[in-house]
Image (cartoon, rainbow, N blue to C red):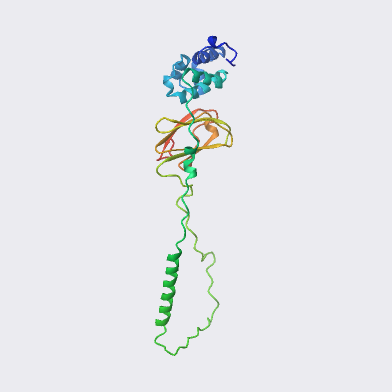
Length: 264
């Protein structure tokens, strides 16, 4: 269903359009709430064009999209109308700061050749000194010959390796800044609408994360996420993979801080 052909002065408000479409579809508020997981008081408030219970423009847009799909309306058209009635959309955040964690890489440490040469010289001097003193005062200048071994060379015991195996690193996870929270989203199960805010409530990103795409967000304290299709998004928090926060088609909200990967 589309409102695009209705004259501007005759178009219903966003809330009234959602309410009328719900009634035309034969749905109750309880049924819409169960299908969308938007709480009943919020559904009632939105249908009365009261968006104060949504918690901000980002959440209001997410609720409008979800409710529009449930009652058969064009969600993009309703969101555009909402933006017209509430001062428009915020300016998008430049992409460069969002990938700060990926861009910063520690420089490789160069080998200290001077220290290595000094250590080698000390080792040679020590070996020569040990050889001279272990000769027992023999000044003939002859070098004693080493008697051949009477038996076969020793072999290591079966099942034992003489090689020293390197110890695994304490963390097999890619380095993430310890003084920040870093969240990476990967759409591996389909498209999903997402939004992200920093700890001040500033919108970092809002839009559709398409199948196969990924997004990384970084903040010094906290990142708040809204996932429109939670079951289709894989999450990595501070370099660690966490469990999915919902099923396919579910709208979920979650927050992460520097102390995670415990889900918020």
